[in-house]
Image (cartoon, rainbow, N blue to C red):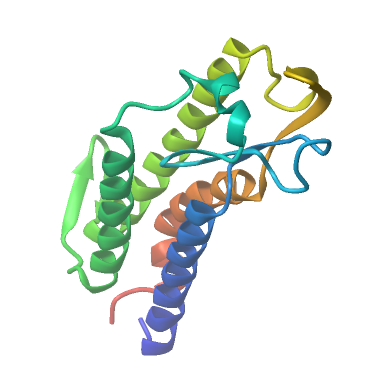
Amino acid sequence: MSRARVWLFRSLVLVSAGLMLLSWFLPWWGVSVPAYSPKDVVVIHPWGLEQDLGPFAGYIHGSEMPVWFAPLMWIYLVICIALLLFSLLAKEKAVSLGKFKLSLPQVLIGGVGLSYIFAVVIAVIVIAIRAGDFNTPLQGYTYIDLEEIGSGAWTSLRLGYWLACAVGPLLVALALLRNRIIGKPS
């Protein structure tokens, strides 16, 4: 195990944590109504929904998440980033998961990756259900009637969601490949 290989692995984990943060702050889903506004009028982030419908905000009344949801999601992010940072300094203590023996850093990194995969899957299910409640497709075109403005609306999963789809598996892969990347202990 050389110092260069250990620092390479640590760098890969830090880059993955940075990508996780980037995916967190980018929109995961959005609605564009070109006749009303040049920017997205509804945007969903992992922690909740933001809207810029002005006087037409009643159109999406009832789509808000419970008040405890946003703080819970921010706590989740802080815990994930803290676990990734702790994994960089954690000892090589062996952890048994059934018939698999992994090191503590592998368990921490893989656990964060699996939880992010779970978060991404749950998010798309919730978005699809909530959008369906408003007769809006998860991705595609719909016609909406905003009082005197009748217009088409485009909905789609955004870059933040697709980046999040990559980050979870990347962390799991790093956890599984950790010993190959850092080499054998000397």
